[in-house]
Length: 613
Image (cartoon, rainbow, N blue to C red):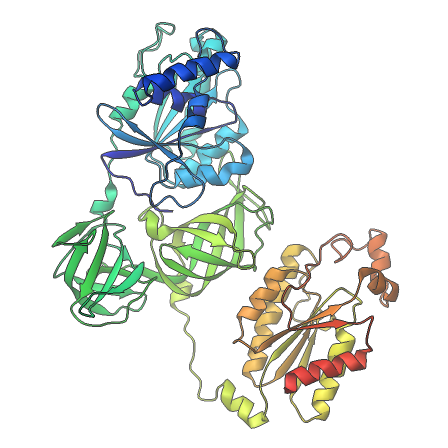
């Protein structure tokens, strides 16, 4: 999520809808700029003929299929970059897929792009994916947009068609805050206005695509920003001296500079500096460097170094725009893992403020984000991190979200601002702590989480376990799903969003109760692995025992003491687990109880034996 552009290397992405001609335009640029050897040119002509192209056309998209994908350091996911060296500039070009399901690829390219070339098919005009890609360019702050209105040959090179598309697009871009928009009519398949001026369009007097790309003023603003060094690794030299290494995200650092570490605020001085392994007195943004402090202070991977006179902001709560990639929706209260620069930490979406309209970026009411949606959310992290608004520093403002269960990248985001309330709330140290309360009760506090289908027997077994523990003089409390919904969670329904919040609240209550020294029994369907994993994460290893009450759906439905399955089958209970809402079976439960093989009393004794072992 960094923007590693330099003034002598320009990162260019081609985006737009499917079949608008992105690959053909890039292929034409590479072909006419001399990137392709003569033998490959001849082979391309033959291959194009075999594909049935017209005599005056070459299928330049074939060129990209034959070129090896080149990846540059700093590009994180799913974007292949190709080199183009012209007379005045070196380009890295990415062909971003136009399919909606590959929006993540386009977002990855936009996050590092200096210039975006947006293809529009003159025969189709502006399409939904045109608007979606423009919205993403706006969110990621791409400053220069070239609109290539392609396939002009198929509309008779009509100036009126071009003018109509340009007028509509400029109005749209203006609403989104994109100021630098250049529009060029092209016929990429035959090369018109790509690298040479087209006599077929005498009404157009502007630059060709190549001329424009070579003239766009690309300024690397990182050098003017305050120094920020995210620590990637800690090294020791042969003399045992400690060095902190990483890529300088912005600014300039020199030996002798006074710096501080975030989070934490410890101060020191740069005693020595290396750039790409060689000793140096100064380093600039974009370079791989290592620094040695004048004294030993606590600093490690994930910390950020900054000047004492310009410290980096720290918070554990942000407002951020989020682009969602995953098929499973983003749900408020669900836990994820956030990677921000070299920092990685647990996070929760505490509030979805709105979803952005994919065309206008106007806010729309929403309770979730579906795949490829863009929205604004409030994120709460497990601990404070160093950050910057994305508009000020892309490295410290851009992040990805990871599913802690599957380890899949599910979203990307841009921090807009931190929340002050995060800076005004501090954990209050108490003299009587968990260990003291547990010692007074003479027991080991734990959370025993019973999960399974409705009617599986969770509450029955949990009740028997509590009776058995009570008889042994132990201090317990049973949190039952139905009982909690009469009070603490009476405001919640049974949508996926409400189920997630229901379990978040119960997890926090269970954590507080174990801090009080109690053995807490939790009896909830808890259908989603992600929420059970989030609950487990609140407890120390060994203090959370997941008990899967394993009962086949057919058996649970036969019991149906509350008549819930019957109502669900009649359509009177929407979102009922096992009928029209899924139950995700635990993969690593500490105990699995088969209610069809043993009695509830026997199963309860198994749980008690595990607790007392």
